[in-house]
Image (cartoon, rainbow, N blue to C red; front, top):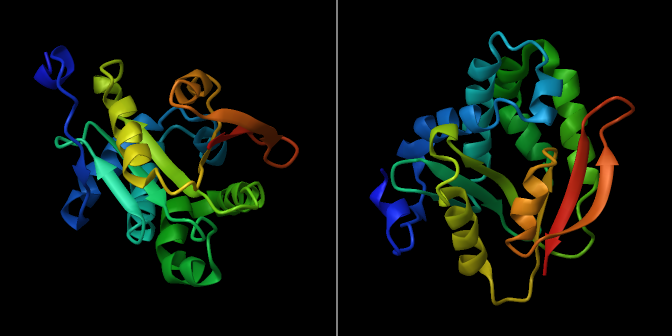
Length: 202
């Protein structure tokens, strides 16, 4: 049993750095293997994990200017974007275009539609963006995902700037509500895409 999960001490959370990139990309790929939005982007399960690893490696890089937090053995992690930096900029799209094309392949159209829809539903006021939060399925239920999200809230809290996220997994709503988030909007990507819930804390 994980000692950190079996005693009363708070799990240790640290900043993720460049050497953590491959192991966290693989962890996020496992954590999001059944995510409704990514299953819509990549409907064929064959090769999905390989593409997700590539995608999450890119997202890890693109969030370098924000705050990247992880459990010490990569069981769970979060990627945060700072206020004013949530949207995908043209420069970012151009910088990562070759890698994105390799990651998405023929699914690039759905990938771009998903990214555009997410950007379109951001709040108007400044916010900290919980871009990604994931826990390895082998470690779920031990409070590690909660600990790493809470660590980000505690780290960036106190400024009066709210925290924002969106999720396409309905069962996650209660989890985030227990951390102080509330649903502000429900929306769908296009006509037949996944349903999302926007959530705000603060």
